[in-house]
Length: 187
Image (cartoon, rainbow, N blue to C red):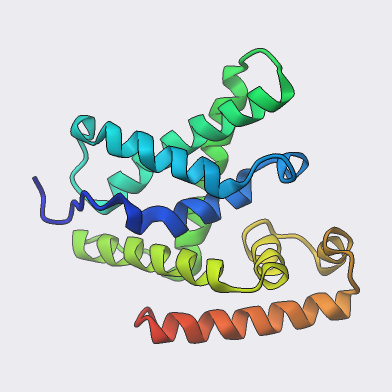
């Protein structure tokens, strides 16, 4: 087994939680907590760890994203009582992969060596953890702006505040995020 592989899946919790929050249908937020879906994902991954054939943290993250996508699709299906639509599940997986890609792009330039890829994955995990530590409105503003590309006006409507308030949330959130990442040694 490759030394980059780590059977401790708990270190992916913040990363998966961020992705779940990014992809959970807003209409389900009152009915379903993203942390429940992440917990289910980690339990299933732990149960099936012997079947994992990857060699490094990047492959582990991709495997966990697949499980998370399946669980999010199942939760959405359970709440909507619609018949299973595989297109929804595939589009959810693509969305999670896209979110993960945006997260990684936000961190670093193109890196190609295995050690650089491992470092990039570790930075993604640190960023996800730092995001979970932000106050909810700051986290939402940062995620909507930098991961979804929403305008200040759109964020203001979503968070029910002015664009000036959104600007303040973003400023404080990014400042706190930078400091947290610096404290964690991810700068």
